[in-house]
Length: 122
Image 1 (spheres, rainbow, N blue to C red):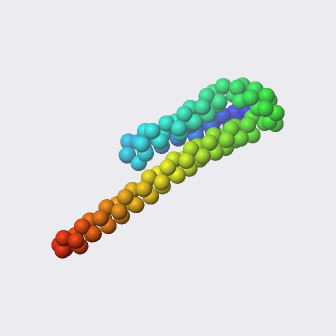
Image 2: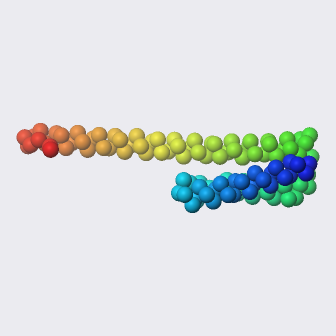
Image 3: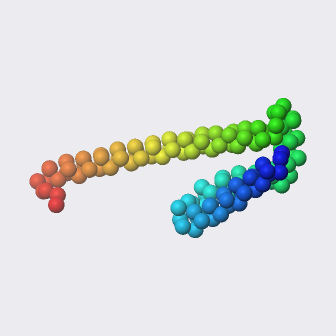
């Protein structure tokens, strides 16, 4: 891993940390959501401080260069994150659908009850 690439990784890690800190402080991001990004940033920071580890991992996996290994590693981690977010989104969509259906049934029952008693809702 070249010195320039290590410096870029360090800069990105620091930027990520300050961006997360600012986002949490301004309540634009919850702490739970930022943990993933913080861990990923710390892992890349670890790789930039100890470049021998990604070199060894790249060689073990048969990847030509360390930079290619790091890009592949980050892409894989982000794909896992995307899968997790999509699964959570699907659950939330089902919950919203159930809530909307329950609210519609409740409204219908109230209208039927009002029509039976002859009262109008104001």
